[in-house]
Image (tube, rainbow, N blue to C red):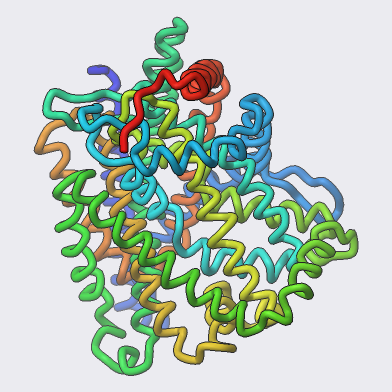
Amino acid sequence: MHSLRINLVSIFCLFTAFSLHAQDLNGKAEEAEQIDENVERTFDEAVDEAIGPVADFVDAIIFYSVPLNKDVEIPLILIWLVGGAIIFTFYLKFVNLTGFKHAFHIIKGKYTHKDDPGEVTHFQALATALSGTVGLGNIAGVAIAISLGGPGATFWMVLTGIFSMTSKFVECTLGVKFRDVHADGSVSGGPMYYLTKGFSARGWGRTGKFLAAFFAVMCVCASMASGNMFQINQAAQQFIGLPYVNESFLVDSAWVFGLFIAICVAVVIIGGIKSIAKVTEKIVPMMAILYVGAALVVILVNWHQIPQAMGDIFRGAFDRTSIAGGLVGVMIMGMRRAAFSNEAGVGSASIAHSAVKTSEPVTEGFVASLEPFVDTVVVCTMTALVIIISDTYKLESADGIQITSAGFATVIDWFPYVLSFAVILFAFSTMISWSYYGLKSWTFLFGKSNFSELSYKFIFCCFIVIGASISLNKVVILSDAMIFAMSIPNLFGLYILAPLVKRDMESFLTRVEKGKIETFD
C-alpha cells in the first residue's frame, strides 16, 4: 500500500502539472487577446482545449460502440452493465422481485439490533444512496431518451431498472460484508474494500489492489466533476434563468450562488456520513413528494389520456418502424437511460450502504435493491408519462429539462419555479452524497487522517464555486466516462464474488423461514 500511495502521489503531481498547463494556455490566450481584439478566449475555453484531447480519448474507449445495423450502434459498456444485471437476476433466482417484502421489513428495523456495528440506519443509507442517483437524469435524461427513441423507450427503461435491482443487491451486500469498522466506530466500505479483501482471499491480491486503486481514482475524479461541478452548474443556470433573477447581478456573478451552495455543502459534509444521512433522509422524501406529487397532478388531470399513453409505450417498444433506428434503437435508448440513471453496477452506492448498522450484510442488499425501483421504475416513469401525455417530447427546439418543464406547465403554469427548486435540491443532495463517495475513495488511496479528510472536503467545496461559473463541455464528457469506467473493475469483482452473496442470501432466507433470526419491533 505504501508503494501504491507513492505512485498515486506521482499521478497527482502529473494532474497538477496538467492544470498548470491549462493555466498557461489561458495566459497565452490573454496575450493573444491583446494582440488581436477580434480573438476572444476565456478560461473555460482554455480548460476545454487542454482537457479536450484527454476527454475525447477516454470517452472513445469507455463508450466504444459496435454497429448493430446501418442506423444503430450499441456501447459495449451498456452491454457490460445490463448484461450483468440480467445474469445476476437469474443467478439469484429473481431476488429483485421476491425480496420486496423483506426489504420493507428491514427498513422498518425488524432484523436490526441497536448494538449492531455501523453508523446509519437502513433508511438513512437508502436515502443517501438515492440522493446520489435521483437527479437531473430523471428530469432531463428521460425527456431526451423519449424525444430520440419515442414513448417505447419507457418500456425498456423500466425493464432494465427492474433487472438493475439485482446488481445493487449484489454490490451492496459485498460492500457491507467486506467493510472496515474503525476503532472510533466509523465505517469504510465499497468496491475498494471487497475488491481488495475478496480477491486476496482467493489468492489474487495484486489484481484486487490494482482494480481497487483504479476504481478509487476514477471515483475521486468523478466526484469532483460529475458529482459536483456538473450538478452546481446546472442548478446555477436553472436558478439564474428565473424571472427577476435573470435581471440581477448573479447573471455575471454565478460564483456567488456557487459560494452559497458550497457553504451549505460544507456545513453538512464536515459532520461525515451521520450528518449527510440526517440531511438526505429529510431531503429525499421531500424531493419525492414534491416531484412525484406534481407528476401525479398532471397525470390525473389528464386521466382520460392514460390508456392512450400506455398504448403508445407498448406499441413503441416493439415497433420496428420507430424513430432512432427502429426496435433495437428504442431498446438501446431506454436501457441506456436506465443504466445511466440508477448507476447499478457502477459501485458508487455500495460506499453509502456500507455504513449501515447491521450484522447481516445481505439485509442491506435487500434494501439497496429498492434504489433502482424508486429511481427508475417510479421517478423516471412518472417523468415519462407527463412528457408522453402532454406530447412535449415532440418539441424540436427544446432540450431535456425544457421538455419536462413544458410538460408540467400544461397543467401547472408556475411549475418552472417548482422545477428550479427541485433541481437545486437534486443538485445539493447529489453533491453531498458524491462527496462521501469521493472521500472514502480518497482516504483509501492516501490514508485516513483528519488532514487527509479535511483536504478532500476543502478541495471539493472549492470545485463547487468553480463549477457554478464556468462552462463544462469537455469536463463533463471526461467525468461521465470516469463514472462508467468504475463499472469495469466493479462488475468484474461482482462476477467473482457473487457466490458469496448467494450463499449469504440463502442462509438468511432459510433462517427467516425457520424463525431463527431475532426480530425487533
